[in-house]
Length: 79
Image (cartoon, rainbow, N blue to C red; front, side, top):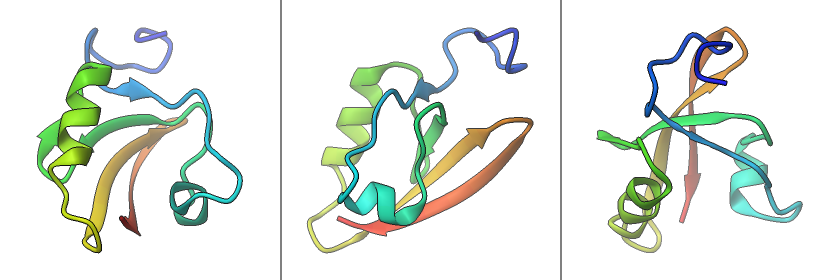
C-alpha cells in the first residue's frame, strides 16, 4: 500500500472506518485517508495517532494532515 500511495514505509495511519455521526466525519475524514500528522506530531503507527489525539484538550481544534489519493489536505474538527 505504501508504494501504491507513494509513501515511505511507516508513514501515516490508514483510516479504516469513520462513524457516520462523528466529528471526524463532519470534518470530511474518509475511509482510506492516510493521517500523516495530528497537529505537528507524525503518525507513523496507530499508537502515535492515539497519543497525539489524546494530547489535544477537549474543546480544542484537532488539525490533521491527511493524504487522499495523490494529494495532501488539512482537515480540522473540534474535539
